[in-house]
Image 1: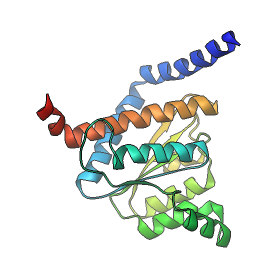
Image 2 (image 1 turned 60 degrees about the vertical axis):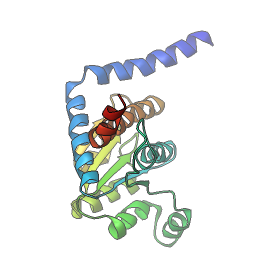
Image 3 (image 1 turned 180 degrees about the horizontal axis):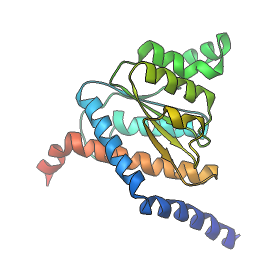
Image 4 (image 1 turned 90 degrees about the horizontal axis):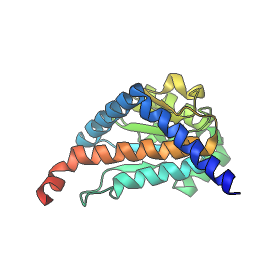
Length: 198
């Protein structure tokens, strides 16, 4: 048992070590931070979507913006799109589960918004369709996936394809990347509050 625990921790560290050594991903994180900062500064919103554990991660990251990360500050307009269960179940029942996200993007998304989709395979049909709709509406798309990027790859303006095919290890790195983005966006927008307290 102890050896197995060690191996799982080591596997998680190995994936993160690859991210640490990947200058391209770090450059893309910085670029994504700038895009999200611009969206918030311009009064636009950041929307999140995912399925299962990735839906939980989407909700977690949205709350880091609409609540707070480190700084006591104004709320930022961010939302996980699966939280309205009446909408979700109605659309899934009346149309298809595949359009639960694309339909709400169609109805509420505007040019300049940002859509962040989390899918370990990169092949979640409802997220792919949401990204297609987002592109039509000039909404920036940020995909967090596993190694290949899957079907989300061609529809992602920024793709963070974690170098793993192991779902738990991918999800752990999605939260790492998401936390980095949340922290840096908060600092860029509200850094003066933090500086005033130092």
